[in-house]
Length: 555
Image (cartoon, rainbow, N blue to C red; front, side):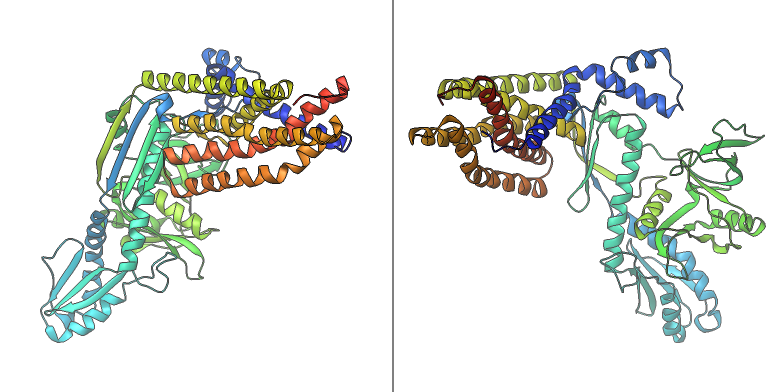
């Protein structure tokens, strides 16, 4: 076996060493987990540590890899909720907020339209009657000027409202394109609020994702019960708007009277000294949407209710050229400079935004409360005892699978079967190393994927060893037979494993929840098993041949 370059052999063993190093923290799971939690808490506290945190930090060396596989809900225990968001509620709120604008716009045409009255109508529809029917068309055209373009990829070229006339009345409702965009924004806003609420309690690896058109799946490992999770989600975020006294990089700056020091959300080492009393709060905010400024650059447009509009207008008139802090949960998410008096409660935030950033900022501005009522369709509490039982069951299944595979390989191929078992151990270590590095969450179906991989991993070794046997029967020397076995079996190995890999990819993109967990570990396992069977096994065999120089081999 002289055809393997030394650099390739060294690279294989380097990968094996790294895999073992990055998988090792999972053998000391509780210690490493406490170390990581303490490190995160100390960093959040600015470097100061309590005695308990210092003790937890010392349980694992800082220089060693500390990534561990996150355990899913079924392994750690926790709460599971499936919520339905009533997106139609947002349509009614949008239309109700539009009525003052329509009324104010028609005041300019009082001589043509006469008196303006809002009429009873279904939710999500605004009907307006005027006392002078002759001015109906002019009134419709005037209200149409309130329409703005829909800011979404699917709504390009469409306006947000449709204005028509019916039985002598003006009818205003959201356009279909705006309804679709509103649904997207409502779900996105709900996801953002829920994620922020859940993250505050320090839970590990929550799953918060959209399912279908109007549902959200929430799985939070480590939380006490589904009822506790429902209470947590219902908490309202605190959104306020404050005058800015000054900006500093000193985290220890002393606020003046009636001031407070707040960190910037996305600007490290930046702190704002703001007045404690806000000018307006999130309770006064009725809407915030991504938009474009007069130069066509992405921006964020916001709207206050009449009370907030009056307070905001008075403040901006008296503070032109000064920054204005938008604070969410005691963090400054933006501090725009007031360019001019902003009457009517409608303003725009400009800056070096991309479309994605302006959309995200709009979501944050609206994140003061859930945008629509949520109905919980499914709720489950999984106790930690059940999670521990699942882990033990997974361990037993993995040990049994390993023992059976090892017994079969050693019985069939003797010493070379032992080499395959060693490669299988490296394969499992590589799977855990990759899962730890990616921060992937391991679930019970994921354990099933790993167990399945153990059986599939030796398929490649069987193909290689059977090929070596054929070459030995043909009279080849041990070294030549091994070279031919590994070389000519490669195409068959790739073909056999590729179909399984494609299946795992399809399951990942099409499936959800447990199916995706199974697909992740199965896909990673297929890739690592090809590497260990072809390269790691060959490196082990090469060590054996170079050490013993056998005249004959038995496979």
